[in-house]
Length: 505
Ligand code: SF4
Image (cartoon, rainbow, N blue to C red; front, top):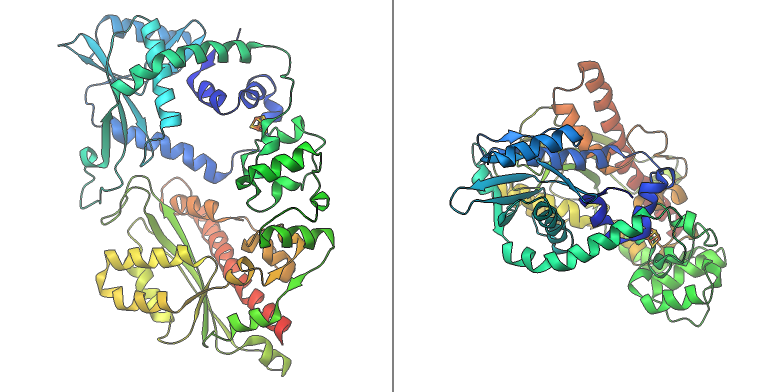
């Protein structure tokens, strides 16, 4: 029989089969290594827990999960140790460590504090996680008192020294968890039985009826009859359960097998038709209408930001984005028109990367103010993001408000051409992401060769850049990689606009 950890129990609740692979066939489950960004999420959880521990002075930390650590836990519990960090319990093949156990002299019981590095409570995960711990503690003879869930408070705004008592919110959820313990006890036994079976679970994957984003890493192994690009990749198909069920039940997994009379949204139908008939859908009139509103000089800008769980600087709340980098191209006049006259339009490039451990907001705002003129359209990809960062800068630095309002009013989202379906190519695969559009419109520009290939890694790179863990030489190389990545994101927009101009000329 296996030993069931609370992590695997929570995963079991999401999909039993998936955890079975995690335990019995890890080579199938762990297909790829964790990205830098995924590693950073784990580190964030650890960092938040370390900060939260400061609320509990004079605690004893139990290190490790091994037998000696379990024995030590029991000894401290027997001694009624006032506070324990990470006490580890094993009983009846269930295993869990508790973030904080605090002894209450008056009641003679231990209060539990579970620390979560999130702003919100996730009842489906956090409550079941705690009920697992409570059941196990009771099995081990520990008297459980108040059950608390500690999480970050999104209303907290740092001002001066970090106020850990305001940074965290602690919710007493004793009643809710005690009410859940019976159900969880039954489920724990079920999970243990299921996950202890040696034979690979038979039967179909219920994800066959869910969109691609729900599929786990073992989907292809369990469903070899489903092609790599399938009806599960149709944009927003996961929201149309009835249609996906109809397609899956009839065995129509290839995109070209979607019946012509199936009622679909315009983007869904365009995605299927562009693939099935290998055609490019271009609405020249509409693209021209979009682009004729552009005012030159045109500014192409892209921001990189870091969402720090623990606010690093004054004015920031948990997970509020810190803008640390931008890349900007300025195009004085329509590029293609000039290029066709043999006079390529002048393209200027500016960039900013804050490489110190301090709030970049002011230097960032001053730098963009220096380079963005008072007239001219500002082109971004997915404007909601850049505009919200701008607004937050204005909240922290009100003297920039008029300037920020002006740039937000002049911002144009180049992605609109693609989300509005004015240009559809089969290789976009129903997406309007720049990573999908660029290889079609400007295949000479590739992210592949870059050391940094996506925004998440760029964000976690900044922490390395301003920290003390890497050498000056490594920092210099990292800085170059970060600048190169952001520059390509911006130049990609220049090239996409240029290609759109060619299309409508
Ligand atoms: S693909 Fe879905 S149903 Fe199949 S194992 Fe993964 S999560 Fe479970």
